[in-house]
Image 1 (cartoon, rainbow, N blue to C red):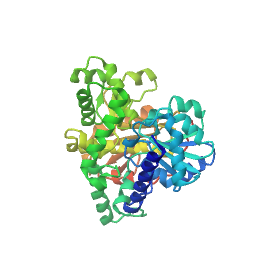
Image 2: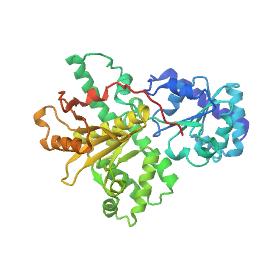
Image 3: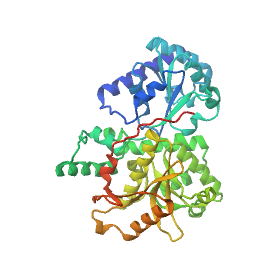
Image 4: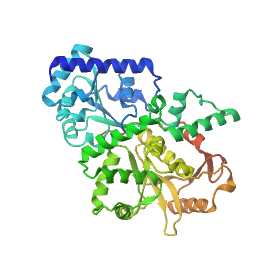
Amino acid sequence: MKLGEIIDVLLSQREEIREKFEREKIIERELDKEKVREFLKYPNIVAILGVRRCGKSVFSWQIMENAGYVNFDDERFIDLDAKDLNRVLQAMYEIYGNVESVILDEPQNVRGWELFASRLRRTKKVIITGSNSKMLSGELATVLTGRYLDIELYPFSFREFLRCVGVNFEERYYSTLKIAEIKRELEKYMEWGGFPERHLFGREILVRIYGDILEKDIVRRLGVRKRAVMKEYVKYLFSNVSREFTYRKIANILNVKDVHTLKNWMNGIQDAYLGFTLNRFSYKLKEQMIAPRKFYPIDPGLAKTVAFKISEDRGRLMENLVAVELLRRRSYWNREREIYYWKDYQQREVDFVIKEGSEIRECIQVTYASGKDEIERREIRALEKAAEELRCKKKTVITWDYEEEGEINFVPLWRWLLKKNTEKVLNRKI
């Protein structure tokens, strides 16, 4: 590309970002920006990863307000290659001046970008964003030799969602009226999800986001030829949230001959942050590997867009919310945590087991119940059995509308989602 053409693209990208900040309500994310800035004081790179359209670019601008910016996920850059990157840098200087900070949005679209980013970080503070968890493997890991921090950003949490719709929840005590308001918004959150653009453009934008993720981040990257089967596979997973699955069973349903095809597609789904799986807990690694898994979409709104009749099962929707929130809290504040589900030979099951180091910190059961008499006894027995077997002291049941403290803590979903973080740790350096 010619220098003038690149300058024109970067100018339009800058104007687009400026208009976004002027026109839209920008929500402060729960990630600690100061810790990120502190890491950037050194010749390091910060990589912000996450599902497409979850707000990575905006968060990057919140961290470094006066930065040079290039979005490589632009159709005008479709033929850009490594030899053009010096002209991109020259164009950036023409527009932004000799800036101290640079944001490279989705640079993995350009072959050879790793060496370019590594060269920049010697004299600049560099943030890169990406929609695939594998963008940091391979060449970049080699050339940076440990000089980067990776952060996974998620769609809006419920707390961020409430800030977006203008509902104040920073109160020590909640009135009956305030609780009713928060629960109404929770219903909306379960319907809409946390993608920032959902609030501006409605459900149609989720259809588009899903299509982009499937086509750009999975199908193209993996070279999927059987696209129709791939789409049915994703729909099956989204329609069976929180239910155990095996690749063999799904292969039989979809008439797929090789289960390795499904495993490869699942890797692509998780790499693109479209969803994630949980293993069954066992102290024996082999048992973990052969046991069935559970699948959870990354966002409730996206789940309802793709799935078949998931909205009819409120308990599964609640469980999906809890699963994503647990993953979000692990990513933002405590990378040492591991999340599983538990099941024994008598088919007693607990939704989530939280492990930290060698210790099981918490066992969590999720149920759509508004009173203690609505909670099935088998769910409580399973929780007690798991806690006994795993030597876990903290037992929690997340309900829709029942609350009680005791040996087992019952907490409504809305209150659990609003729980303040008390362990702000950004502790993953690679």
